[in-house]
Length: 254
Image (cartoon, rainbow, N blue to C red; front, side, top):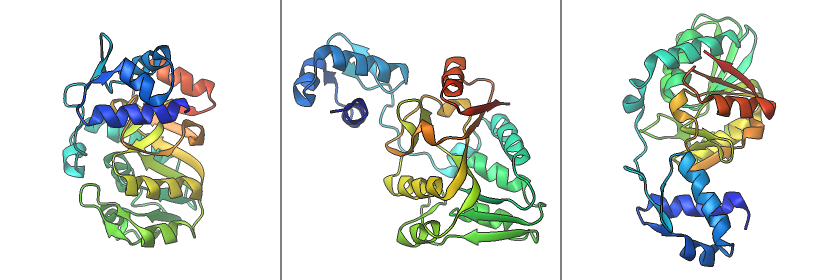
């Protein structure tokens, strides 16, 4: 069993609120106790659990519920606006772009209202409403079933449209971004939608304030290797930025 699979199992177990034993995990996963200890140490550094003698326990509030759009929009507003402004500089008139759900991506959409000859594909209801009156924008709304927590449209109708489009740039919000687990979001259906967005774009531009870095949500939709550019704020951990740069990701700090 490879490292990513082991750690996904460990994350699932710790999210249920159950303390973990190195001995039990070693037996269940078929690897040495030393390997399990390394896994637990790595996950502790990402804030996903707390090490104990002989195992690990959930961190305080470890099985948090997915926050709603309204709950997220008031967190780090200055950082999100700065990230959105930098992202807007990467959008040229005549571009075809894709926007997914998220408060920072919504801030970007608000900055694009006056652009000309721009095609925007989105699966997000509130972003579509932001751009609906923009005469210079060709707006493509995917359709689908709307998730009330994120305003994202998901499901078979959404996926059918995304399989038929190609864009130059995808600007994506995330719930978590880490070196080992890539880009993640709490909802598995929305993660699948996001993965199709990644496949539809030439360049993947991630908009993530520092609170998203090192975090891992339930469902992965892209690896770090898929990311072209990360735009984040100055509170992002320097070692994370350095590692991304070593991997060929263009990191812009605002």
